[in-house]
Image (cartoon, rainbow, N blue to C red):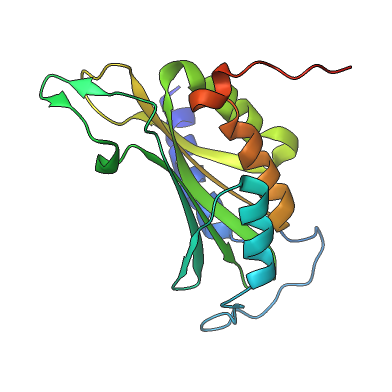
Length: 180
């Protein structure tokens, strides 16, 4: 049991270091000292922003979209916690050396939203969940952070993230559209 637990903790960093997905049987490439990465890709950023319905900020080779959780009035034994004190969902998009789009980030969710968000992120293996943890102690409602990472084309990544967002905030409580 302990050996399986230790093996799990060793595997996580190895996944993070492994880098981009490569085709099986692909020839090994000589590692470069610093991979050449496209530093700006306005078309991809526009696709992502349009799909998510939110503008981001491009800085230091990363396009970041931040979505505050203003709908969660979080309190602890020290009082109310302002949204700007880390209660926001953040998505980071960047091009990797292989040319694919990578995305990492953190969803801030109420505990009752966590399972639905995780399920949606893992649709078709688009994202991997790095961690799920509480953000605060003795908070009401219970607020969790879901750290994730994934890669693919910009539109697919943004669509999956948009789907996961639909399980949070006011959108979660919105009337469902008819399938007819």
